Amino acid sequence: MPRLRAPELITEWFGLDADFERTPTDPADAYRRDVWLGLVLVVLAVAGSEVARSAGLLDEETPPWLVALLSAAGALPLVVRRRYPLTVLAVAYTHFLVLGLTVPSIPMTVVLQAVYFVALYSAVAWARDRQAMVVVVGVCLLVMFTWLLWQLAVGSGLQQAAESRGLLDDPPGYLDPITAMVAHIWLVNMAYFLGAIAIGQVSWNAARRRQQLAHQAATIERQSAELQRRAVVTDRLRIARELHDVVAHHVSVIGIQAAAARRLLAKDPVLAAEPLATIESASREAVTQMRGLVGTLRDTGSETASDGGSDGGSGARSPGPGLTDIPALAEADDGLDVTFSLVAEPPGADTEVPAPVALSLYRTVQEGLANVRKHSTARTASVTVRVDRRPEASAGSAGSAGFAEVEVLDDGRTRPGSSGTGLGLVGLRERVAAHHGVAEIGPRVTGGYRVRVRLPLPQDPA
Image (tube, rainbow, N blue to C red; front, side, top):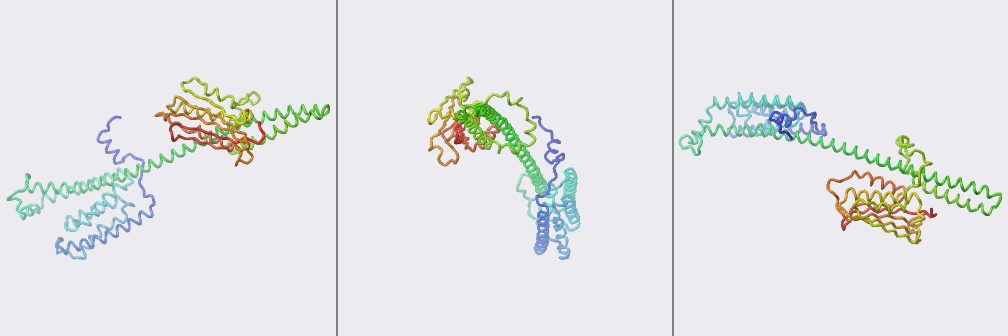
């Protein structure tokens, strides 16, 4: 990264080219608090001037009412310090300069010194035009230091102070007493003015940074929501194509069996009962599966239409993969050693899993192993398929005749720099929800990662 030169650093730090105007989060409340702050400082300024006058620190020739009036006039502009920050600064420092040339003891009171500090801080922290801020602040500093230089040049207070303390006869330090006093005054004033500027600019930069972070967070949230929406829409479109396959398959079966039943009715009504029973079972299964899938397709809108026809005609499509195709996923020769096991109760129950359920389980294994290969350091993984149609497996699940489950386990750690978008898991959960199943996805306590999906099986076998 190239180093910035001094002018570029100053421009960046003061935000001269920044497209940002600082405004209070709640303007009405902020301006109301400024009014209270200004009024409190007015009271304190008047009280402070009276304390200083009573202590003999002010010119005795100035009438008390005039001292109080001039002190209050210095603090009063702060009631609009955030509404008109540069104007307040100009008025406050004009007040300082005029009194410094006429009655210099009044602006030196503690409260008015704090007022001038707050005015300078507010101008830097709240000025909306940063270039105008630099000009106004620069002019004020130039006038203040010019006045200070003039006071040191023509005044005799330092000489008198040094003589009264006996510093000229026996200097306590390495520096000349007069020189040390001048240096001390300059250091105090530099700390005073530059401190107010630095604190104000830090406040302004912090406000700009908070706004940038808020905009970035809002952008990330919108993008994340859009990515999730697209993932859901994409998966719904996949489910829609699978639904098309289911409907096409069952309608074809129903058509063939209906034609067979029609021919047999006249010749042998007893034999016609078999194709009619097949029609009944196929239609019931189709309705059951469609109810589970249609709910996820209601809000696809125009995206569905735009994706239509992407399969190139459903009549030529082959049935989707199922449980019998899962071992092929485990046998892929890509450096990951995958063990596969199938548990079916009773034996052969895995052959009765409906095609949409089997397809969802297949996609779960596919996604799980893909995540292991992409994002994990694991060299081994296991895939377990469980199908249970025993009566006790259906307890607590109305309308269910057991369950089918897949589980993908690995013992690795997350590979650095390989974090994904999570969209595949979003689609997986959508698929599980379509079948009213449950999913357990996340790291294991003992190490590694688990993807487990359990889907209920319908009463009538496929």
